[in-house]
Length: 241
Image (cartoon, rainbow, N blue to C red; front, side, top):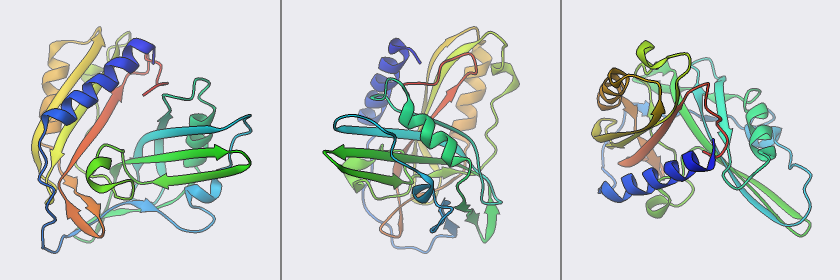
């Protein structure tokens, strides 16, 4: 992703988050959902990660989007870090994510495939190194801090065929306010694209609007949250998101 696209992504995200008002109250009801999350032990992402060899102090935040399969595997991980020019940290996470295992998400007791977003923060000060893994998209830090679970879409969300033009290059940003019940309260779509028809955007808006979610969780309770998801064409460099 070039600097222009990175700047656009950051600007769009900031704008949308500022636009959408969130009810921060925690509802008192029993949910019929469980979120996908990493397993503990040797197949956890944290156990598989090693700190890349670097000189000097660093603080790198790697954000990832993927598919959390119903069989406990992570599919199609795409990771990047805006402050990692060589993408060394992002590549390390991307590779290890394919070997990690998750506890699958469930809806009414049935295991479901979901979009699975997570963040890895690498920190090094002097000789002290740390790696922290969070199952969220970092878009609700001001309300919940770093330790919450992002909303996870479980309804079908394949990229429409009309958006798959061979030479198309695009960054499409889905944004939604997801209620504590998993419903979309508000949604928006921002497009930076070349070579795709208007019908692509129309169909994607409908997909976002009608999506079904496992809600975000904070301190064990479902909460309303902001959810952000990038669609990125294969013709577009993913670095920098």
